[in-house]
Amino acid sequence: MRSRVVLLALLLAGCGAGGSTQLPIACPNPGLLAEGADLTRYRPGGPQDLTGLDFDARLIGLNGSCRPGRGDRSINLQMTAGFSVERGAASEGRSVDLPWFVAVIDRRTDAILSRQGFVERVNFGRNETRSTIDSAPVSISLPVGENRQASDYRLLVSFQLTPEDLALNRRRGPR
Image (cartoon, rainbow, N blue to C red; front, top):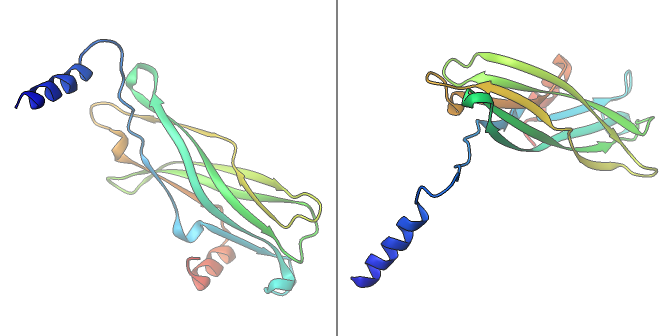
């Protein structure tokens, strides 16, 4: 019994109001759009097989953090996206531009509230055919308050696909 009282006293001492300890701020959950996580491009006019492959890219992950905004009326999110890219046999240069975007979705209505597009350049060294990189940091500010919380938002990341790219991803299925 005495050990329980001592343990409880120690736990409560750690919860005291002594100082400016802040709890971590909640971040909206980011995710990869499944149909937009792959981008495969072939040489124009060439065969759509390994001999005509320009590059094959994948979104492989997201990383980020949140902090309170000005006057605690917003959440400032900073995130990066991870990419894995493989140059194909038809690739003529040593760099690849990857168009991608981040969409902010209202979780209650599924409406797109904002969308930011980016292009990430991947440079390959001599005789290098594969590369994994992280994007430059992306900053997003989301309003919060009495009627809106971080959990009311959803962030989706995807490659910017042409209709042909999307059709290929749908035929191929998730990888």
